[in-house]
Amino acid sequence: MKLHTISLNNLKRRKAKMAFLTIGLTVGIATIVTLVTLTRSMSSDIERKMDEFGANILITPRSNGLSMNYGGISLGGVTFDQREIREDDLLKIKTIANGKNISAVAPKVLGSVTVGSHDVLLVGVDFASELKMKQWWKIFGDAPKGDREVLLGSDASRVLNAGVGDSISIKGESFKVSGVLDQTGSQDDALVFANLSKAQKLLGKEGKISLAEVAALCSGCPIGDMVTQIAEKLPDARVSAIQQVVEGRLKALDQFKRFSYAMAGVVVFIGSLIVFVTMMGSVNERTVEIGVFRAIGFRRSHIMRIILLEAALVSLLAGIAGYGIGMGGARLALPFMAESRNAHLVWDVTVAFGSVGLAVTLGLLASLYPALHASKMDPTEALRAL
Amino acid sequence: MSLITITDLEKHYTSGSDIVEALRGINISIEAGEFITIMGQSGSGKSTLLSVLGGMNHPTAGDVEMAGVHLYRLPGEKLADFRAQKLGFVFQSFHLIPYLTALENVMLPLAIVSMSSAAKKTAAREALGLVGLGTKLDRLPNQLSGGEQERVAIARAIVNNPQILLADEPTGNLDSKTSAEVMNLLCQLNAAGQTVVMVTHNPENGAYANRTIHLKDGRVEMRN
Image 1 (cartoon, one colour):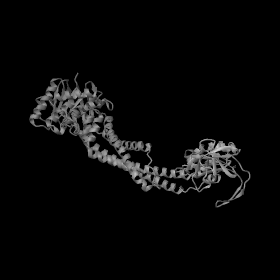
Image 2 (cartoon, rainbow over the protein chains, first blue to last red):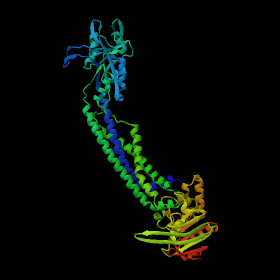
Image 3 (cartoon, rainbow over the protein chains, first blue to last red):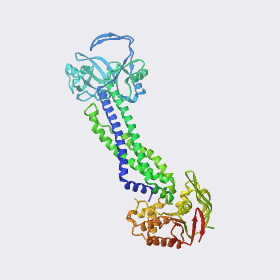
Image 4 (cartoon, rainbow over the protein chains, first blue to last red):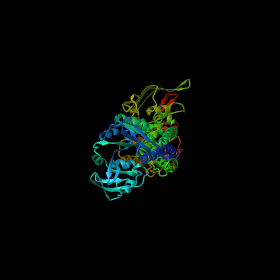
């Protein structure tokens, strides 16, 4: 016989009341879990889309020139006082306040080279970053793995008459074509991609880059702020945001998030009220019982422990059930709420532990006053008979 | 030295604008091993006296000394500890916990004592054996008769080997045959050295006691 035996046996005896309490709290926790998981899953869905969209910030050398192109037709331009970006400078990008939102930084060096009898644009890239950013690329063959391999755009492959496994010569050096891009409909089709450091050597631009694309996962931060932050770190570069189609969706999501939190607040309040009223009723029903406990020498702290342990056990059960039901609800609701059909449910350990923790905290806090009330009961009053 | 010494005990209640003097200058000494009955009519103050003796009702004035301890000078929860260690209670309406078995009800005072579970069970079984209920350990209170419930209540009161057993009308809800059984049981406990202080309004029960204290209007009227 320990104090928890009393709590457990009382819970077993008052099944209906405790079931009501558990269901009330479970519904509250389930609602919160559903809302939070839906919000996170939708954010993740949009972030994934942004990832697929590619870069949303472009870093180019600062110059005092004026570009002369319109609608994709370039007439050259007047460029003077062109500055350079050092490859090392890009390391500073990750140090901005919103650094954790940066998904990938893809530096590029550009230069014209001759392959056979054709002039082509050689682009030196860091393939790891580039492939992360351009997830829509379909490569026949493999991405280059070393200095001696290149990737060809579909048009470049056709014009140069080189396919996967062939070799091409650039500035007297032989490179194996490890892969050819499927048609993208973009400028990538006409390019030859090589390893960044190798391309820098071939073009005589060691340590320099021509431009860098930055992909930011930015559901929680404004792109404009990040542009300003990067510009402060790279004063010799021009940093510009690429207009985001998803920005409007992010705003809508932000509104939904706020609505979710407000709903969660209301649900938490109602849940607390249910626990409070039920526990208070339970304590009042057990007046005689508590009087007996006090009469036979239970301290106030013992009474509080009995009541709070009951609340904790019920809340724990409600927390676990609420998490399960909430995730089930989110899974059912997500296809109707998310933009993509293949949006994935975010399983977050924080939500799991958070929901159980919230339920127990809520149960304990709402039961604190009933427990105090019980512990302060006058045993003589409680027993009446004495 | 007496086991219990009550000196100039006063207990006043406020009822609206009136002050009710439940106990008025009570002086009683009880020796270890005595069986005392406190008798009196309804409203005489006997139950109030028992609750003051039980450390549950702070007196307005006076002193209660028990086993060398000035009860109401104990700080905070020490009074609860005193009840747990030195006192046993038997209530008129049994007040068994309905969701605990007979064995668990008897083990209740041991829930806050540092003992192994096995030792607690052994002590509770012994107490139930002593009151003749060794075969009904796993019954819930509603599966026991009134007399049996009272025996469980007595077993619960003695399981912690208290120095003083306080009983409030223990036969108040029982028929005469069962009442006699319960009174005999209390006598047996007393014969084994247990000090018993019992409140009753039944004069027949007085015959079982060494001494009877009669209360009237909050005062000791007569001592037998």
